[in-house]
Amino acid sequence: MTRTEIGVYLIIDPGICHGQMTFKGTRIPVDTVLAYLGKGYSVEQILRSWPELTRPAVEEVIALAAESLQKRYLAQGLAFAAA
Image 1: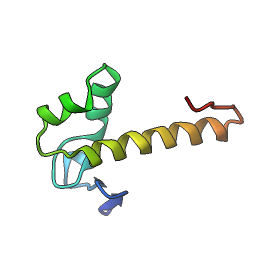
Image 2 (image 1 turned 90 degrees about the horizontal axis):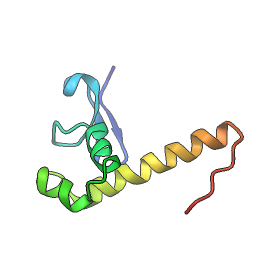
Image 3 (image 1 turned 180 degrees about the vertical axis):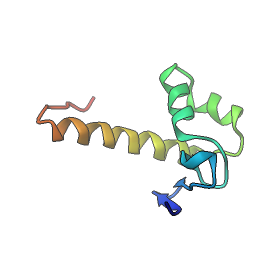
Image 4 (image 1 turned 120 degrees about the vertical axis):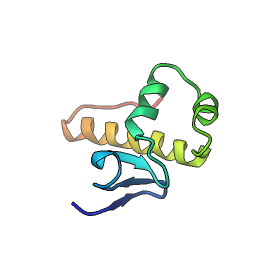
């Protein structure tokens, strides 16, 4: 597997965190940040916890996760209403 850039701020590199998707220039797994958001942490709290992250990077991962979720349900023929 080769290095794959996703969007502006995300990367999958087999040499970084065993190929987990991370934020470029860090070893912070995307799924970890999404898990913290899911537990109710704010973007501000995440940025304080990982100062090497930027707001645009976190916003990109949120947007890509939402897009992925919507595509998944649309592919299954289910309606997904935006809030």
